[in-house]
Image (cartoon, rainbow, N blue to C red):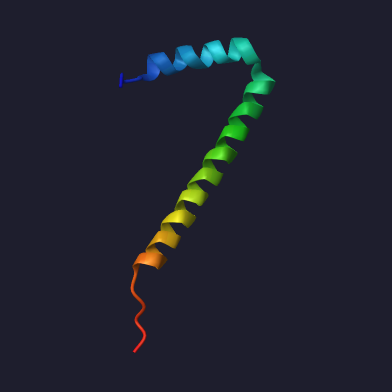
Amino acid sequence: MPNIGWPELIVILVIALLIFGPQRLAGIGSAMGKAIREFRGAVRDAENEIDKSTTPDKRP
Protein backbone atom coordinates (compact mmCIF):
# COMPACT_ATOMS: atom_id res chain seq x y z
CA MET A 1 0.00 0.00 0.00
CA PRO A 2 1.46 3.38 -0.94
CA ASN A 3 2.30 5.89 1.76
CA ILE A 4 0.05 8.95 1.75
CA GLY A 5 1.78 12.03 3.12
CA TRP A 6 0.70 15.59 3.83
CA PRO A 7 1.01 16.84 0.23
CA GLU A 8 -1.27 14.08 -1.04
CA LEU A 9 -3.82 14.68 1.74
CA ILE A 10 -3.90 18.40 0.94
CA VAL A 11 -4.49 17.69 -2.75
CA ILE A 12 -7.33 15.28 -1.88
CA LEU A 13 -8.88 17.84 0.47
CA VAL A 14 -8.72 20.61 -2.15
CA ILE A 15 -10.33 18.38 -4.77
CA ALA A 16 -13.08 17.35 -2.32
CA LEU A 17 -13.64 21.01 -1.43
CA LEU A 18 -14.01 21.91 -5.09
CA ILE A 19 -16.40 19.04 -5.77
CA PHE A 20 -18.63 19.23 -2.68
CA GLY A 21 -18.22 22.79 -1.39
CA PRO A 22 -17.46 23.86 2.17
CA GLN A 23 -20.94 23.35 3.67
CA ARG A 24 -21.49 19.88 2.29
CA LEU A 25 -17.91 18.85 3.04
CA ALA A 26 -18.43 19.74 6.72
CA GLY A 27 -21.57 17.59 6.80
CA ILE A 28 -19.78 14.70 5.15
CA GLY A 29 -16.94 14.95 7.69
CA SER A 30 -19.41 14.95 10.55
CA ALA A 31 -21.24 11.91 9.19
CA MET A 32 -17.94 10.07 8.66
CA GLY A 33 -16.88 10.79 12.25
CA LYS A 34 -20.19 9.49 13.58
CA ALA A 35 -19.94 6.34 11.46
CA ILE A 36 -16.39 5.67 12.67
CA ARG A 37 -17.44 6.11 16.32
CA GLU A 38 -20.36 3.70 15.84
CA PHE A 39 -18.11 1.17 14.10
CA ARG A 40 -15.54 1.31 16.91
CA GLY A 41 -18.32 0.84 19.47
CA ALA A 42 -19.64 -2.19 17.60
CA VAL A 43 -16.15 -3.70 17.41
CA ARG A 44 -15.63 -3.08 21.12
CA ASP A 45 -18.98 -4.74 21.92
CA ALA A 46 -18.12 -7.74 19.75
CA GLU A 47 -14.73 -8.10 21.45
CA ASN A 48 -16.41 -7.98 24.87
CA GLU A 49 -18.89 -10.69 23.82
CA ILE A 50 -16.06 -12.88 22.52
CA ASP A 51 -14.13 -12.39 25.77
CA LYS A 52 -17.21 -13.33 27.80
CA SER A 53 -17.82 -16.47 25.77
CA THR A 54 -14.21 -17.65 25.89
CA THR A 55 -13.50 -16.88 29.56
CA PRO A 56 -14.40 -19.81 31.81
CA ASP A 57 -16.76 -19.17 34.71
CA LYS A 58 -15.11 -18.91 38.12
CA ARG A 59 -17.93 -20.50 40.08
CA PRO A 60 -16.91 -22.75 42.97
